[in-house]
Image (tube, rainbow, N blue to C red):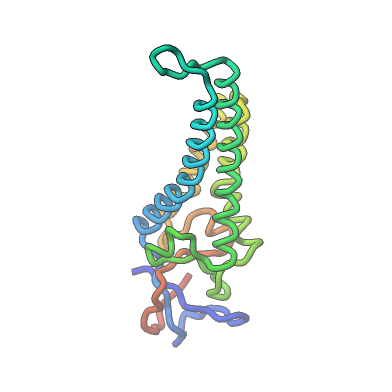
Length: 205
């Protein structure tokens, strides 16, 4: 069981420590929390896109059978709306993860799964600078690629490269003994279970 000493500000962790310890979050808990967050973020984007498409469609003329006649202008309007929704969803995703991690250490998905992000030096939520760094390393490239793709820019192999980089950064959790991704290592954060465990004297970072 991978566990961390629950540090306090200005007091570095020790191998011989009577403070409470926290258990590293399981890999599947982290994965399922991320999936839930993706669902939560997709819902408003879907609702907005559906409402815009419906509004455009209802403004079309109908043929004798009552079917809407799609025009090039309407198709362009829907395409433009899709670009704006994709770009907006990418920015919303960045703000969602950065702000919630910085302030509380928990997104909605993490809260449901009972895990949180902590600053290893203090045991508190990581704060804004670390949350930004953490997000940029994990998803920053994907954010840029998504916006460019929404704008109709052909990225070719670069989008695939961004996906590979994301998998490497996040996949580091599978191999690190304390289940930390490369974004955790860079930001000096860890994802842990909510409940502190009993004190002990062999817990190391």
